[in-house]
Image 1 (tube, rainbow, N blue to C red):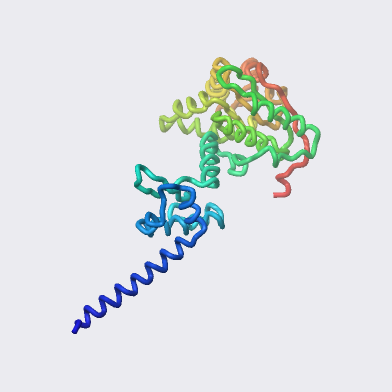
Image 2: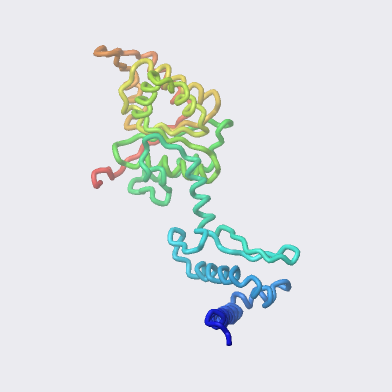
Length: 313
């Protein structure tokens, strides 16, 4: 007479075999597995049975892909990857490759890495031309100029830039963000800088020793966007040794610089004349003109008008 343990073992083995046979039958009845068998001369029913767990996982995850809930909710073992079957000298392997959504997401992140921003809001960094307001004819012209620049910019060979000016909240900075994203699609690196905060950072860099490193990073970037120039309080050192040397270097190296400002050229020149040292205000007309020569040299002034969107936020 068999012992109780032998009977239990036999029962368990029998139950396991039944479950195994059921899984084999279900898997082999799957349209996807049948298509693999019919389309691939190496994959047979015996191969599927031999690699039952792997093919079962393959089938489940491919079904997930057929009813994709989106990249963030992907239930696959490797999120954003779908299984593929390959054979190497008769050895069957199930590997993984990124799905379309994963590839698109990777490309988006790669492009975003081409855009560096200092003190610029996230919504500006993610700007697109399709969302640019067209509530004024001046914006249509500005958009056309921005698109032309984004499609034709050639850092190192052509230093021509743009100078957008106009009232608060009309979309100057947003349009610059759209330019940066289009340049990223062309693998052209861009840095967006909010000018007043950048100058504050440069001044702090003197005390902690990071001044030269920070300035060099901004000087040498292929495309530089200086946002809201004219909103800062300038010392003669910031104007001449920082802004002046920055623009001179970029002009000589033919690296495009783009500006946004509330001032037109004449108003910006007047702003640059006045510098502060302690409580003493200086008026330095000649030095302001030198800065403006570099800006006027290869920057087309483009006026933007329209509704102030910030009033509604």
